[in-house]
Amino acid sequence: GTSHQHMADMLRSLERTGSQVNLATLVGHNTIREKVMGKSQSAPNKEQLEQMRLMVDDAMREGALGLSTGLEYAPGVFAKPSEVIELAKVAARWKGVYATHLRNEGVDLTSSLNEAVSIARQAGLPLHISHLKIACKRDWGRMPQVLARLSNARAELPGLTYDVYAYDSSASSIDLLLPAEFRGSLGRARSILDDRQRRVLLVRGMVAQLHETGFSDYSYARVTWARDLTMAGRSIPELILPDAERRNLDWIGEVVLDHRLIPQIQAILYLYSHGGAQFIYRVMSIDDMVTVLSDEYTCIGSDSAVRGQDNIYSHPRGLGNFETVLVHLVRDQKRLTLESALRKMTSVPAL
Image (cartoon, rainbow, N blue to C red; front, top):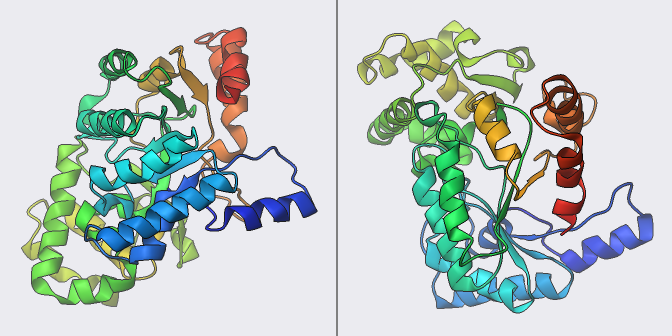
């Protein structure tokens, strides 16, 4: 859902300086929405929607290959399907694709898949689902049903594809630990926590979201970056707060009944109010991942940004994704043939 704002400038720069890899880009809905509407959670008015349409049109004219959304993240999380459809229609006029990070990869996966299919069908362009997964412990093992739903949709969307990376852990920001209405609010974290009504809504929403996904606590989340670098590499239950900071969050005990969760939520809200954090989330099943990987319409992607050598706790998929497929899944475990793996790394994404 994010991209360079000015496609022509980026591509001209690459023409001048060169690149170590081949590059193709989509235009990001989050980038465009934030440029036009800032942090607003409202639907765009006619003028704002037209401005976003023009920005998508410019990006497609300048070389973007389609529209990308990240509907689990702010500000895309606040967009209604009708808004996305209108922007996707612009990409469709240029014969572009619609690539989406689903609105919800956990308890609402089915409705999020239906939303993605509906957007692509109404806009009239091919659909690609980014890193298809079931990020909900309660629903692990249901990937065959998910793929069957997508196979049925292929009758109306023949270009429907998806990608996957070869790990049972995702990587993202602290936002995914928060209810949808609080995502993108790091800049307002302290004012939210100072407001009794809003902080109670925040914490209750966090606990409800945790239980809905089938996890008993936050041990599945491990810090990869925080302003306090001593926290990197630790899971949420392993985080120890300064005494003064912990006392400031003692009010959580009035909201949360499960005493095991109180120090964990204190740690999350401490990070939330101190610049945020990045996490590795162990929320998937290896068997589900292999099921997706074996599907005819899957290609292999890393879903990783460029990382420097100082990112010692960043997700290993940025460097080891293709090696993991070839060494572990093909050679050692024989869960995928070499021919199939190479096809998913080369000709499938190229098409």
